[in-house]
Amino acid sequence: MDIIRKTEEIISRYPLCNTCLGRLFSSLGYGLENSQRGFALKTMLLMKAYNSLEEENNINLVKKLARSGFKPAMKLLEEKFNTSMDENEVEKCFICKGLLEEESLFKKISQRILTSLREIESKTFLIGVRVDESMVAREMQVISDFGVETSETLKREINRKIGKIIEASSRLKVDYKDPEVTVIVDFPTGNLEVNIKPLFVYGRYRKLVRGLPQSAGKDHVRWDAPPKPSIEEYIGRPLLKVTRGEEVRLHGAGREDVDVLTLGSGRPFVAEVLRPRIRCIDLNELARRIREYSEGKVEVEDLRIVARSMVEKIKVLSEKAVKLYRAIVTFEGDVDEKDLKSIESSFKNILIKQQTPLRVLKRRADKVRSKIVYYVKTKKISSNTVEFLIKCQGGLYVKELITGDAGRTRPSFSEILGTQPRKIVLDILYIEETTRGLER
Ligand SMILES: [Zn+2]
Image (cartoon, rainbow, N blue to C red; front, side, top):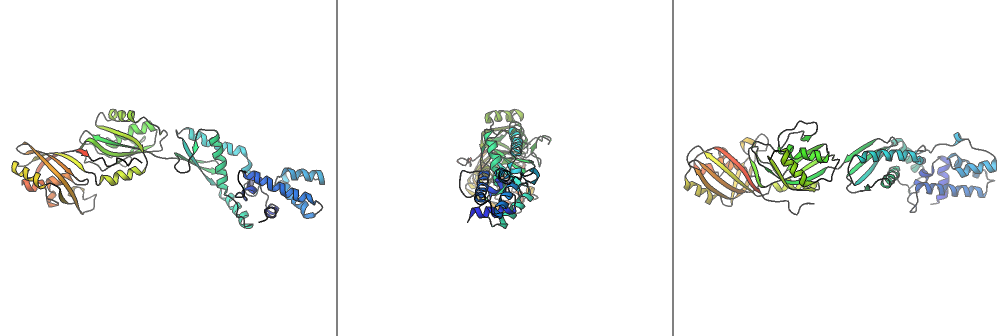
Protein backbone atom coordinates (compact mmCIF):
# COMPACT_ATOMS: atom_id res chain seq x y z
CA MET A 1 0.00 0.00 0.00
CA ASP A 2 1.29 3.43 -0.91
CA ILE A 3 0.41 5.33 2.23
CA ILE A 4 1.27 8.74 0.82
CA ARG A 5 -0.89 8.25 -2.25
CA LYS A 6 -3.78 6.98 -0.21
CA THR A 7 -3.50 9.93 2.17
CA GLU A 8 -3.48 12.29 -0.78
CA GLU A 9 -6.68 10.76 -2.13
CA ILE A 10 -8.37 10.94 1.25
CA ILE A 11 -7.35 14.49 2.08
CA SER A 12 -8.33 15.65 -1.42
CA ARG A 13 -11.87 14.52 -0.81
CA TYR A 14 -12.33 15.03 2.94
CA PRO A 15 -10.89 17.66 5.24
CA LEU A 16 -9.65 15.68 8.25
CA CYS A 17 -7.97 16.80 11.45
CA ASN A 18 -4.59 15.28 12.34
CA THR A 19 -6.19 12.91 14.81
CA CYS A 20 -8.87 11.54 12.48
CA LEU A 21 -6.40 11.20 9.60
CA GLY A 22 -3.84 9.49 11.82
CA ARG A 23 -6.44 7.13 13.22
CA LEU A 24 -7.05 5.70 9.72
CA PHE A 25 -3.45 4.43 9.85
CA SER A 26 -3.43 3.59 13.52
CA SER A 27 -2.18 0.02 13.22
CA LEU A 28 1.01 1.16 11.48
CA GLY A 29 3.70 1.52 14.12
CA TYR A 30 3.87 1.87 17.88
CA GLY A 31 4.43 4.64 20.38
CA LEU A 32 2.69 7.30 18.35
CA GLU A 33 -0.46 9.27 19.00
CA ASN A 34 -2.87 9.34 16.08
CA SER A 35 -2.49 13.11 15.98
CA GLN A 36 1.27 12.63 15.49
CA ARG A 37 0.62 10.16 12.68
CA GLY A 38 -1.77 12.60 11.03
CA PHE A 39 0.69 15.49 11.37
CA ALA A 40 3.49 13.38 9.89
CA LEU A 41 1.35 12.29 6.92
CA LYS A 42 0.30 15.85 6.15
CA THR A 43 3.93 16.97 6.44
CA MET A 44 5.01 14.30 3.96
CA LEU A 45 2.32 15.41 1.51
CA LEU A 46 3.33 19.03 1.83
CA MET A 47 6.99 18.19 1.20
CA LYS A 48 6.01 16.14 -1.82
CA ALA A 49 4.00 19.06 -3.21
CA TYR A 50 6.76 21.56 -2.44
CA ASN A 51 9.15 19.49 -4.52
CA SER A 52 7.40 20.59 -7.75
CA LEU A 53 5.18 23.50 -6.93
CA GLU A 54 4.81 24.49 -10.58
CA GLU A 55 2.41 21.60 -11.11
CA GLU A 56 -1.25 22.51 -10.84
CA ASN A 57 -2.25 19.41 -8.90
CA ASN A 58 0.42 20.08 -6.28
CA ILE A 59 -0.88 23.58 -5.71
CA ASN A 60 -4.32 22.07 -5.27
CA LEU A 61 -2.92 19.61 -2.75
CA VAL A 62 -1.42 22.44 -0.71
CA LYS A 63 -4.82 24.13 -0.76
CA LYS A 64 -6.54 20.96 0.38
CA LEU A 65 -4.06 20.62 3.21
CA ALA A 66 -4.61 24.22 4.20
CA ARG A 67 -8.37 23.65 4.07
CA SER A 68 -7.97 20.88 6.65
CA GLY A 69 -6.43 23.41 9.01
CA PHE A 70 -2.81 22.34 8.45
CA LYS A 71 -0.85 25.45 9.46
CA PRO A 72 2.39 24.79 7.46
CA ALA A 73 0.27 24.56 4.28
CA MET A 74 -1.45 27.84 5.09
CA LYS A 75 1.93 29.43 5.68
CA LEU A 76 3.22 28.15 2.33
CA LEU A 77 0.26 29.62 0.46
CA GLU A 78 0.87 32.94 2.13
CA GLU A 79 4.62 33.06 1.45
CA LYS A 80 4.74 31.65 -2.07
CA PHE A 81 1.43 32.66 -3.59
CA ASN A 82 0.53 35.58 -1.43
CA THR A 83 -2.87 34.07 -0.78
CA SER A 84 -3.71 34.24 2.84
CA MET A 85 -6.34 31.75 3.78
CA ASP A 86 -9.34 33.11 5.54
CA GLU A 87 -10.18 31.40 8.84
CA ASN A 88 -13.63 30.55 7.55
CA GLU A 89 -12.19 28.85 4.51
CA VAL A 90 -10.72 26.28 6.85
CA GLU A 91 -13.19 23.46 7.02
CA LYS A 92 -13.94 21.51 10.12
CA CYS A 93 -12.83 17.89 10.23
CA PHE A 94 -15.33 15.85 8.21
CA ILE A 95 -15.47 13.09 10.84
CA CYS A 96 -15.26 14.78 14.25
CA LYS A 97 -16.06 18.41 13.40
CA GLY A 98 -12.92 19.33 15.30
CA LEU A 99 -14.03 17.84 18.61
CA LEU A 100 -11.21 15.30 18.87
CA GLU A 101 -8.63 18.06 18.94
CA GLU A 102 -10.50 20.05 21.59
CA GLU A 103 -8.41 19.29 24.65
CA SER A 104 -10.77 21.31 26.84
CA LEU A 105 -13.68 19.04 25.93
CA PHE A 106 -11.75 15.95 27.06
CA LYS A 107 -10.72 17.72 30.25
CA LYS A 108 -14.31 18.71 30.94
CA ILE A 109 -15.65 15.18 30.40
CA SER A 110 -12.84 13.65 32.47
CA GLN A 111 -13.51 16.12 35.25
CA ARG A 112 -17.14 15.13 35.29
CA ILE A 113 -16.20 11.45 35.52
CA LEU A 114 -13.71 12.16 38.31
CA THR A 115 -16.35 14.02 40.27
CA SER A 116 -18.76 11.10 40.06
CA LEU A 117 -16.00 8.61 40.92
CA ARG A 118 -14.99 10.64 43.95
CA GLU A 119 -18.37 9.89 45.53
CA ILE A 120 -17.49 6.21 45.38
CA GLU A 121 -14.69 4.57 47.28
CA SER A 122 -13.16 2.39 44.59
CA LYS A 123 -9.73 1.42 43.39
CA THR A 124 -10.38 0.30 39.83
CA PHE A 125 -12.49 1.61 37.00
CA LEU A 126 -13.26 1.13 33.34
CA ILE A 127 -14.57 3.68 30.89
CA GLY A 128 -17.01 2.74 28.17
CA VAL A 129 -17.76 5.25 25.43
CA ARG A 130 -20.90 5.69 23.38
CA VAL A 131 -19.97 7.80 20.37
CA ASP A 132 -22.48 9.98 18.58
CA GLU A 133 -23.89 7.80 15.80
CA SER A 134 -23.55 10.33 12.98
CA MET A 135 -19.87 10.74 13.81
CA VAL A 136 -19.35 6.98 13.60
CA ALA A 137 -21.28 6.88 10.32
CA ARG A 138 -19.06 9.57 8.79
CA GLU A 139 -15.95 7.68 9.79
CA MET A 140 -17.36 4.47 8.27
CA GLN A 141 -18.00 6.40 5.07
CA VAL A 142 -14.34 7.44 4.79
CA ILE A 143 -13.14 3.95 5.64
CA SER A 144 -15.34 2.29 3.03
CA ASP A 145 -14.68 4.94 0.34
CA PHE A 146 -10.96 4.22 0.46
CA GLY A 147 -10.93 0.62 1.64
CA VAL A 148 -8.96 1.55 4.76
CA GLU A 149 -7.86 -1.52 6.71
CA THR A 150 -5.46 0.03 9.20
CA SER A 151 -7.76 2.15 11.33
CA GLU A 152 -8.88 1.88 14.94
CA THR A 153 -12.33 2.88 16.15
CA LEU A 154 -13.29 6.35 17.33
CA LYS A 155 -14.54 4.70 20.47
CA ARG A 156 -11.13 3.28 21.32
CA GLU A 157 -9.35 6.53 20.74
CA ILE A 158 -11.77 8.59 22.84
CA ASN A 159 -11.68 5.93 25.53
CA ARG A 160 -7.90 6.01 25.71
CA LYS A 161 -7.75 9.80 25.84
CA ILE A 162 -10.19 10.01 28.74
CA GLY A 163 -8.63 7.05 30.56
CA LYS A 164 -5.20 8.70 30.45
CA ILE A 165 -6.45 11.95 31.97
CA ILE A 166 -8.26 10.09 34.73
CA GLU A 167 -5.34 7.85 35.60
CA ALA A 168 -3.03 10.87 35.65
CA SER A 169 -5.22 12.88 37.99
CA SER A 170 -6.36 10.19 40.43
CA ARG A 171 -5.14 7.04 42.12
CA LEU A 172 -7.64 4.95 40.20
CA LYS A 173 -6.37 2.16 37.98
CA VAL A 174 -7.99 0.88 34.81
CA ASP A 175 -9.13 -2.72 35.15
CA TYR A 176 -10.36 -4.32 31.94
CA LYS A 177 -11.44 -7.63 33.47
CA ASP A 178 -13.31 -6.86 36.64
CA PRO A 179 -13.52 -3.14 37.41
CA GLU A 180 -15.27 -1.96 40.58
CA VAL A 181 -16.83 0.93 38.71
CA THR A 182 -17.78 1.19 35.05
CA VAL A 183 -18.55 4.61 33.63
CA ILE A 184 -20.36 4.80 30.31
CA VAL A 185 -19.87 8.23 28.79
CA ASP A 186 -21.69 9.69 25.80
CA PHE A 187 -19.40 11.53 23.41
CA PRO A 188 -19.50 14.45 22.87
CA THR A 189 -22.35 15.33 25.29
CA GLY A 190 -20.49 13.97 28.32
CA ASN A 191 -23.62 12.39 29.82
CA LEU A 192 -22.65 9.68 32.26
CA GLU A 193 -23.99 6.34 33.38
CA VAL A 194 -22.14 5.05 36.43
CA ASN A 195 -22.34 1.32 37.17
CA ILE A 196 -20.94 0.05 40.44
CA LYS A 197 -20.11 -3.62 40.84
CA PRO A 198 -22.18 -5.20 43.61
CA LEU A 199 -20.43 -6.27 46.79
CA PHE A 200 -20.93 -9.81 48.11
CA VAL A 201 -20.52 -10.64 51.78
CA TYR A 202 -20.51 -14.28 52.85
CA GLY A 203 -21.30 -15.38 56.38
CA ARG A 204 -23.35 -17.78 58.49
CA TYR A 205 -26.33 -16.65 60.52
CA ARG A 206 -27.97 -18.00 63.61
CA LYS A 207 -31.65 -17.30 64.08
CA LEU A 208 -32.37 -17.17 67.78
CA VAL A 209 -36.11 -16.38 67.84
CA ARG A 210 -39.13 -18.07 66.29
CA GLY A 211 -41.56 -16.32 64.01
CA LEU A 212 -38.92 -14.53 61.96
CA PRO A 213 -38.97 -15.02 58.18
CA GLN A 214 -35.75 -15.08 56.20
CA SER A 215 -36.93 -12.71 53.47
CA ALA A 216 -37.96 -9.07 53.86
CA GLY A 217 -40.17 -9.35 50.79
CA LYS A 218 -39.86 -8.25 47.20
CA ASP A 219 -38.32 -4.87 48.03
CA HIS A 220 -35.55 -6.53 50.07
CA VAL A 221 -33.70 -3.91 52.14
CA ARG A 222 -33.66 -0.39 50.73
CA TRP A 223 -33.51 3.12 52.12
CA ASP A 224 -37.02 3.88 50.87
CA ALA A 225 -38.65 0.60 51.89
CA PRO A 226 -40.05 0.32 55.44
CA PRO A 227 -38.12 -2.19 57.57
CA LYS A 228 -39.80 -5.59 57.78
CA PRO A 229 -38.54 -7.78 60.63
CA SER A 230 -36.64 -10.61 58.93
CA ILE A 231 -33.18 -12.12 58.72
CA GLU A 232 -32.68 -10.11 55.53
CA GLU A 233 -33.58 -6.85 57.29
CA TYR A 234 -31.44 -7.48 60.37
CA ILE A 235 -28.38 -8.35 58.29
CA GLY A 236 -29.15 -6.03 55.38
CA ARG A 237 -29.84 -2.72 57.17
CA PRO A 238 -26.49 -2.43 58.97
CA LEU A 239 -24.73 -3.57 55.78
CA LEU A 240 -26.64 -0.99 53.72
CA LYS A 241 -25.47 1.72 56.11
CA VAL A 242 -21.78 0.83 56.25
CA THR A 243 -21.49 0.37 52.48
CA ARG A 244 -23.80 3.29 51.65
CA GLY A 245 -25.32 1.01 49.04
CA GLU A 246 -28.78 1.26 47.52
CA GLU A 247 -30.18 -2.18 48.25
CA VAL A 248 -29.22 -5.40 50.02
CA ARG A 249 -30.50 -8.83 48.99
CA LEU A 250 -29.94 -11.92 51.06
CA HIS A 251 -29.18 -15.24 49.39
CA GLY A 252 -29.46 -18.10 51.88
CA ALA A 253 -28.20 -21.65 51.60
CA GLY A 254 -31.81 -22.79 51.78
CA ARG A 255 -34.21 -21.38 54.36
CA GLU A 256 -35.79 -22.54 57.58
CA ASP A 257 -39.51 -22.32 58.25
CA VAL A 258 -40.62 -19.15 60.01
CA ASP A 259 -41.13 -21.02 63.31
CA VAL A 260 -37.78 -22.83 63.20
CA LEU A 261 -34.56 -21.70 64.92
CA THR A 262 -31.16 -22.05 63.30
CA LEU A 263 -28.50 -22.66 65.92
CA GLY A 264 -24.99 -24.11 66.07
CA SER A 265 -22.62 -22.76 63.47
CA GLY A 266 -25.52 -21.23 61.56
CA ARG A 267 -26.75 -21.15 57.98
CA PRO A 268 -24.47 -19.95 55.17
CA PHE A 269 -25.64 -16.87 53.29
CA VAL A 270 -24.36 -14.29 50.84
CA ALA A 271 -25.60 -10.71 51.20
CA GLU A 272 -25.48 -8.79 47.93
CA VAL A 273 -25.10 -5.02 48.15
CA LEU A 274 -26.23 -3.13 45.05
CA ARG A 275 -24.32 0.06 44.15
CA PRO A 276 -22.08 0.19 47.24
CA ARG A 277 -20.24 3.51 47.67
CA ILE A 278 -17.86 1.92 50.16
CA ARG A 279 -16.32 -1.53 49.61
CA CYS A 280 -13.72 -1.68 52.32
CA ILE A 281 -15.67 -2.42 55.50
CA ASP A 282 -14.89 -3.60 59.02
CA LEU A 283 -16.56 -7.02 59.12
CA ASN A 284 -16.20 -7.51 62.89
CA GLU A 285 -17.89 -4.18 63.45
CA LEU A 286 -20.62 -5.23 61.01
CA ALA A 287 -21.25 -8.45 62.97
CA ARG A 288 -21.55 -6.38 66.15
CA ARG A 289 -24.01 -3.97 64.52
CA ILE A 290 -26.17 -6.83 63.24
CA ARG A 291 -26.43 -8.31 66.73
CA GLU A 292 -27.22 -4.88 68.16
CA TYR A 293 -29.79 -3.90 65.51
CA SER A 294 -31.60 -7.24 65.75
CA GLU A 295 -31.50 -7.03 69.57
CA GLY A 296 -29.87 -10.44 69.68
CA LYS A 297 -32.39 -12.15 67.42
CA VAL A 298 -29.80 -12.72 64.71
CA GLU A 299 -26.08 -13.40 65.00
CA VAL A 300 -23.58 -13.74 62.19
CA GLU A 301 -20.08 -15.12 62.03
CA ASP A 302 -17.25 -15.87 59.63
CA LEU A 303 -18.05 -12.80 57.50
CA ARG A 304 -15.91 -12.26 54.42
CA ILE A 305 -16.01 -10.57 51.04
CA VAL A 306 -16.51 -13.08 48.23
CA ALA A 307 -17.04 -13.22 44.47
CA ARG A 308 -20.50 -13.26 42.89
CA SER A 309 -20.12 -16.95 42.04
CA MET A 310 -20.50 -17.78 45.74
CA VAL A 311 -24.25 -17.06 45.52
CA GLU A 312 -24.77 -19.95 43.13
CA LYS A 313 -22.41 -22.21 45.04
CA ILE A 314 -24.20 -21.92 48.37
CA LYS A 315 -27.56 -22.46 46.66
CA VAL A 316 -26.45 -25.62 44.91
CA LEU A 317 -24.65 -27.00 47.93
CA SER A 318 -27.52 -26.29 50.32
CA GLU A 319 -29.46 -28.98 48.49
CA LYS A 320 -26.95 -31.57 49.62
CA ALA A 321 -25.82 -30.19 52.98
CA VAL A 322 -26.33 -32.59 55.87
CA LYS A 323 -28.41 -31.06 58.67
CA LEU A 324 -29.01 -31.89 62.29
CA TYR A 325 -32.45 -31.00 63.67
CA ARG A 326 -33.91 -31.03 67.14
CA ALA A 327 -37.67 -31.47 67.34
CA ILE A 328 -39.66 -31.27 70.54
CA VAL A 329 -42.97 -32.89 69.72
CA THR A 330 -46.14 -33.10 71.78
CA PHE A 331 -48.42 -35.90 70.58
CA GLU A 332 -52.19 -36.29 70.91
CA GLY A 333 -51.84 -39.60 72.73
CA ASP A 334 -49.24 -41.13 75.01
CA VAL A 335 -46.03 -42.41 73.52
CA ASP A 336 -44.67 -45.88 74.12
CA GLU A 337 -40.95 -46.13 74.98
CA LYS A 338 -40.74 -49.31 72.93
CA ASP A 339 -41.97 -47.50 69.80
CA LEU A 340 -39.31 -44.82 70.30
CA LYS A 341 -36.62 -47.52 70.30
CA SER A 342 -38.18 -48.88 67.15
CA ILE A 343 -37.90 -45.41 65.52
CA GLU A 344 -34.22 -45.24 66.48
CA SER A 345 -33.48 -48.64 64.99
CA SER A 346 -35.49 -48.28 61.80
CA PHE A 347 -34.56 -44.66 60.90
CA LYS A 348 -30.90 -45.45 60.41
CA ASN A 349 -29.42 -44.65 56.97
CA ILE A 350 -32.88 -45.02 55.53
CA LEU A 351 -34.27 -43.55 52.31
CA ILE A 352 -37.43 -41.52 52.91
CA LYS A 353 -39.87 -41.00 50.06
CA GLN A 354 -41.59 -37.64 50.24
CA GLN A 355 -44.26 -36.33 47.98
CA THR A 356 -44.28 -32.51 48.00
CA PRO A 357 -45.94 -31.54 51.32
CA LEU A 358 -49.51 -30.28 51.17
CA ARG A 359 -48.52 -27.03 52.92
CA VAL A 360 -46.06 -26.03 50.14
CA LEU A 361 -47.94 -27.55 47.22
CA LYS A 362 -49.06 -24.11 46.05
CA ARG A 363 -45.48 -22.95 45.57
CA ARG A 364 -43.69 -26.16 44.59
CA ALA A 365 -44.15 -28.77 41.90
CA ASP A 366 -45.84 -31.97 43.05
CA LYS A 367 -43.21 -34.70 42.90
CA VAL A 368 -41.62 -37.43 44.98
CA ARG A 369 -38.21 -36.73 46.55
CA SER A 370 -35.95 -39.34 48.09
CA LYS A 371 -33.86 -38.11 51.01
CA ILE A 372 -31.67 -39.95 53.49
CA VAL A 373 -32.18 -39.93 57.25
CA TYR A 374 -28.84 -40.88 58.84
CA TYR A 375 -30.06 -41.36 62.38
CA VAL A 376 -32.74 -40.39 64.88
CA LYS A 377 -32.24 -40.15 68.64
CA THR A 378 -35.17 -39.92 71.01
CA LYS A 379 -35.69 -38.75 74.58
CA LYS A 380 -39.05 -38.93 76.30
CA ILE A 381 -39.77 -35.72 78.22
CA SER A 382 -43.29 -36.52 79.42
CA SER A 383 -45.93 -39.14 78.66
CA ASN A 384 -46.76 -37.52 75.32
CA THR A 385 -43.75 -35.23 74.66
CA VAL A 386 -40.55 -36.40 72.96
CA GLU A 387 -37.30 -34.72 71.97
CA PHE A 388 -35.92 -36.03 68.68
CA LEU A 389 -32.48 -35.43 67.20
CA ILE A 390 -32.63 -36.02 63.45
CA LYS A 391 -29.64 -36.04 61.16
CA CYS A 392 -30.66 -35.97 57.53
CA GLN A 393 -29.90 -34.85 54.02
CA GLY A 394 -30.63 -31.25 53.01
CA GLY A 395 -34.04 -30.73 51.43
CA LEU A 396 -35.87 -33.24 53.63
CA TYR A 397 -39.14 -31.85 55.03
CA VAL A 398 -38.66 -32.70 58.69
CA LYS A 399 -42.15 -31.78 59.94
CA GLU A 400 -43.63 -34.21 57.43
CA LEU A 401 -41.16 -36.89 58.52
CA ILE A 402 -42.83 -36.61 61.92
CA THR A 403 -46.48 -36.24 60.83
CA GLY A 404 -46.46 -38.43 57.73
CA ASP A 405 -48.41 -35.72 55.86
CA ALA A 406 -51.49 -37.87 55.27
CA GLY A 407 -49.39 -40.67 53.84
CA ARG A 408 -47.40 -38.47 51.47
CA THR A 409 -44.16 -39.03 53.47
CA ARG A 410 -43.25 -42.63 54.21
CA PRO A 411 -42.17 -43.98 56.56
CA SER A 412 -42.97 -41.46 59.32
CA PHE A 413 -42.76 -41.24 63.12
CA SER A 414 -46.54 -40.99 63.53
CA GLU A 415 -46.96 -44.17 61.55
CA ILE A 416 -44.86 -46.07 64.10
CA LEU A 417 -46.16 -44.28 67.20
CA GLY A 418 -49.80 -44.57 66.14
CA THR A 419 -50.56 -41.01 67.23
CA GLN A 420 -50.45 -37.58 65.57
CA PRO A 421 -48.40 -34.63 66.84
CA ARG A 422 -50.27 -31.70 68.32
CA LYS A 423 -47.27 -29.37 68.41
CA ILE A 424 -43.80 -29.44 66.84
CA VAL A 425 -41.00 -27.12 67.96
CA LEU A 426 -38.16 -27.43 65.49
CA ASP A 427 -34.57 -26.15 65.61
CA ILE A 428 -31.67 -26.57 63.25
CA LEU A 429 -28.65 -27.42 65.37
CA TYR A 430 -26.12 -27.82 62.62
CA ILE A 431 -25.72 -27.29 58.89
CA GLU A 432 -22.74 -29.02 57.39
CA GLU A 433 -20.17 -26.43 56.30
CA THR A 434 -20.28 -27.01 52.59
CA THR A 435 -18.47 -23.91 51.46
CA ARG A 436 -14.99 -24.37 52.88
CA GLY A 437 -12.39 -24.06 50.19
CA LEU A 438 -14.89 -22.37 47.90
CA GLU A 439 -14.14 -18.80 48.91
CA ARG A 440 -13.22 -17.72 45.42
ZN1 LIG B 1 -11.32 14.85 13.37
